[in-house]
Length: 77
View (tube, rainbow, N blue to C red):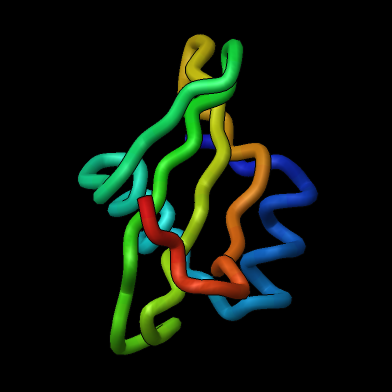
């Protein structure tokens, strides 16, 4: 797994751990796809309350995480 500079900055900004991103990608609660981009959501109640962590990534030779951040509102679908 490789992180873009934007994703690394968001990890520092929001205090997200790399293992949390890996968990979202491996065991998401909800997924979407927009073109080549995969979007995965997973809640971590002990870290972000009811707001899920959103990870946007692409799969090339390896997984490349474009961005990751906790949503500002609870995600309901």
